[in-house]
Length: 226
Image (tube, rainbow, N blue to C red; front, side):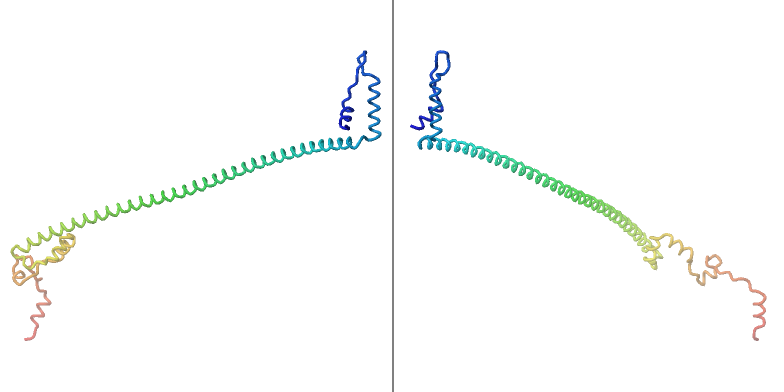
């Protein structure tokens, strides 16, 4: 067969001579067969075998190319997936940092608002305590005033119940007792009303001593109508 012939041409087996080289006749015969095959182009079966071998060789090369292309595609796909994974992780990390910063800012504002609220509550409590102290002081002053008035009223009742005190003005007495300066001013400005007996009695504090008549008044009396 042609394939066997081609295989024999590709892998020649030359007999050796005694000197260790190939047989000259065998080599010449091989060269003649190669020349004949090249001259005639070989049989159809040989050409078909050559074409099949070339197809197989091209198929092997194509398969290698396709395998290399597939390997390259797989490598590019893996690299793209790894890069996309890194981008997703970076985006998640950045989003987490943004959320953390926003949470921290919101917490800071909340703490500031709570601090202001606490300060306002403390200020209100202090103001309330101060107002309560002022109210307590006013209440104590009021109780002291009421006690003083009750004491004055008791003294006034004692005066009223005593002899010769039926015409006492209780309201005026209470006012004088509440304002001692006013009572002293009235006592300094007012005295006992003079009566006919007190004016006639030299021992009376209201005794009125008339000045001695002058000469003019004596002359007027002496020159009066007759």
